[in-house]
Image 1 (cartoon, rainbow, N blue to C red):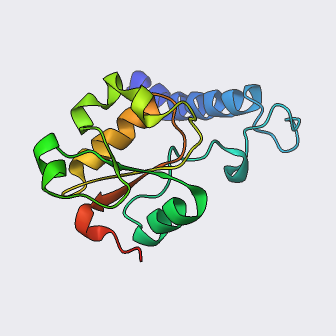
Image 2: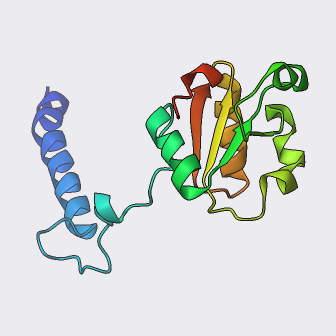
Length: 147
């Protein structure tokens, strides 16, 4: 009976003391952290990798106005059957070994595309992993809406 009374009265009080002690120790009290110690705000956080995907208007603007590399990542046979005007070609599963064909400027915009967008997504990720920063996945070749 005494043990039950102790657990009902002491345990909740100990738990509250522990939580409050950790909060004070970690600097949660108002105004205790300096600007240098505080976490960055949302606007200061690192941007999401690459550019938005499946945005034909953005893809067109990047190619027409910013000289983006239009990159067909379909198979050799698919590329031979037809491709977008001005597109470079590196199959998605060969990009890591053929980065020289993509170029040395890791800040140049790149627009990847394939038949449906799946391989273009994989290619985008490979490029981002290699340090390219301005990559977007158009999706499929039929998504291209650029005069």
